[in-house]
Length: 91
Image (cartoon, rainbow, N blue to C red; front, side, top):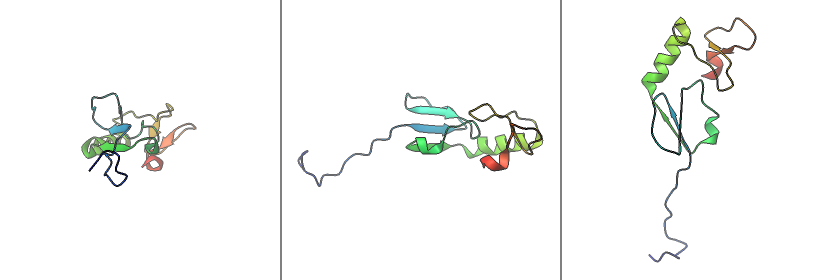
């Protein structure tokens, strides 16, 4: 098919990628944890490591992991102070 054919299939170009739970290299990739990530809607693709997510949730629930939102608010299984975010609200 000629390049100027309007019926020719177009290649899909992925812009920004959000990686949750494990670092990926690349200028278009933003690496975060599930609780510290920006809005998912800002990305064209999301890659999630389920094991890292499970470990983060388990750590927040049992108190062995410190987690904070992108804005810096502490994430707790059950918030006990103002400014803390409930893990259930994030999930």
